[in-house]
Length: 566
Image 1 (cartoon, rainbow, N blue to C red):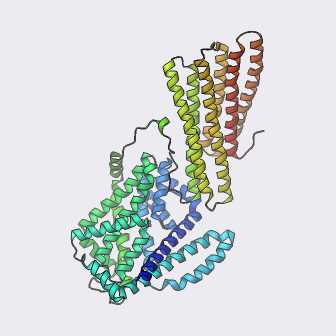
Image 2 (cartoon, one colour):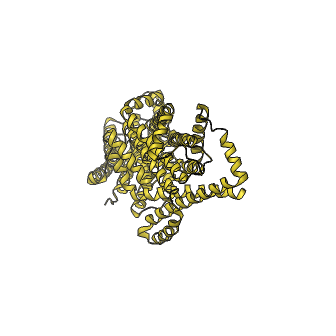
């Protein structure tokens, strides 16, 4: 009995691994196009639903599509309205998995598994076909796990003692009462949440129903529970994301719960309709010829019919679902300088290297914008005369410096995780460039803090003030530096093909020439006793730090463009 239990658990693990490997291989094949497809084909609710359906059918994972959608909303690439329609379509696309599994009950799929393994290993060793080999291995493991699960389940049920014990347990819940229905609904939700795979629970449900241990009434309640349980994954992942991403995940749960409610109300006629479509006679027993095939078809048909009809009904009420989730999930009032978390990178959303690089790119763009805001505070600090306001602003700049250090470390750690995946040469080059970008952006933050400390030292030391000409020159240098930062942010938030890199290089030339001019002018002014040597030193410290910042900005531009400044 212990051996059989471990065989069941092992076959379930094999099925889950095969599903994961197949899904990841499909995502790698389609990865670069997924972002463009989701972005371009969600112009209205109907195209959004079709996009979600086809993408999910392609990658064989509604969880992957949902997490991609949440991450795109988090990154500002999709609106909440578009995301809800995509997730509705994803629910339809995921029903393909159930039909694939039902095939395993129609014929002995294991006969085709071993040739697929053989072909797969050949393709894996052919580097150009490696992903196709990974896909074949995933499919093979999935069907091998399903076949083993089916055979082991049948053997367990046929065992006199074990079969009687299992049948006796489920017989307590055979009565089609509302309480029993809710119990199996909850069971399906909890099991899917624990296993983190609705496909695995669907396989178990099919196995139990095909052997006659579990009544089909109970099986369809487990299927409904799986539809609710699979939505909880995206809610867990979205907990650390922005408010729109959390609303997207909650909309997924809301959509499926509404569907479960109306199905429970119309369960009898709905179940009868599904049985008629699948050609299943409700008087059939497990001893009837073809019962296992028909039972698995009923579950697959029920899963598809539920999601198709639910989508067709609720797609007309997307705006109301949007209003509801916005009402339930309100944005948190958090001061930006107190928010040390990343905005776009969220743990758990690392389904493909392309998606991970996209998230990192959006985060680096946010990092870049934050550094320009920090420099704006430094410019404000230079002209601040009130001591209380000065100290408050200086404190904010200190917090921003801490944020820049944290952002560099967290983005670098994330990119390090991405680097562990199987990457193309192009993606590897992007990751290397991003690591350089965040290092240079953190240096910009350090420069801003150095400027603020120099201004603070002058303010606190009650030294002589700069004369009007010095203030004018510092402001002009800071204006050039801010212009360089602006150009950098244009590049970071847009497409590098449309960026004129010469403009950034020209600003850097201007900053260097102006610094050299002011350096010579400063020596002359000190010799002519226009101001003291101490004031001149502080003055040049500010000028030199701005020039350093200009160098860091050019380094960021170089890293993004893949060019060198000469």
